[in-house]
Every structure is written in C-alpha cells, then in structure tokens.
Amino acid sequence: MIHIKKDNFEKEVLKSDIPVVMDFYADWCGPCKMMAPVFESLSEEYKEKVKFVKVNTEENPELSASFSIQGIPALVIINNEEEVDRIVGYVPEAELKSRIDGILEKI
Figure 1 (cartoon, rainbow, N blue to C red):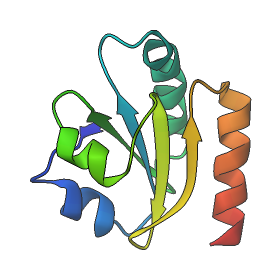
Figure 2 (figure 1 turned 90 degrees about the vertical axis):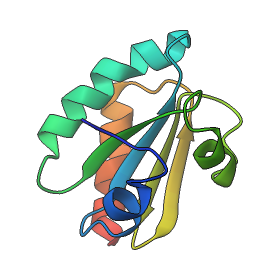
Figure 3 (figure 1 turned 135 degrees about the vertical axis):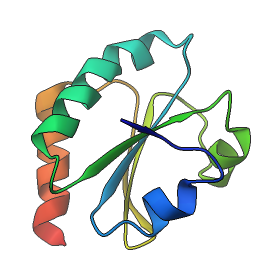
Figure 4 (figure 1 turned 180 degrees about the horizontal axis):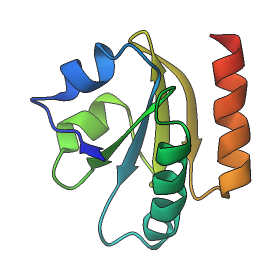
C-alpha cells in the first residue's frame, strides 16, 4: 500500500496510468479503521486496474485541504488528474466495488 505525501503525490496520483483511489484517513478514526480491511481487500482484487493509496490527514493537512476533505474516511477517485468520484464515510465492500466497477466502465 502506497502512502501519499506531498513529495510523491504528483508521481503516484496525478501521473498514474490507471485510476487512483485515495483513502484520506486518521489513525484515531473508528470508521477509518473499519474501512481499512475493505480498502486492503479491494486493492488486491483490482491490482492491475486501479491503484489504491492512503493519505494520513494528520500528517498531510495541505493535501487534505487541497481536496476539501471535511469528513473521514473520504475516498477520492482520480483519473487523468481529475476527481471522478468521492465517497465519504464507511461503505461496505460490495458497495465500494460497485462504485469502482461503474467508474471503470465509463473510462
């Protein structure tokens, strides 16, 4: 799992050849802890099609601010340097998988 910071954001997210799901989280956040195994599971399932990365909001406040993150967990999906979807709060694996599949069909 790639952890995004200011110095690797452009390379890992903006310049990615495949869509990127960014998980904005904090270590103290209960729903973020619930989301972690779902995120990990899907990162394995979509390994060749979608890149899954994590952004600690406490350690990267400027990145969080640049995406106007106001609630966590927040999953921001980027494709070709543009935000294509956003999910705030915990979502079950089946729902997240469905959203990702829908995005992949459109691009």
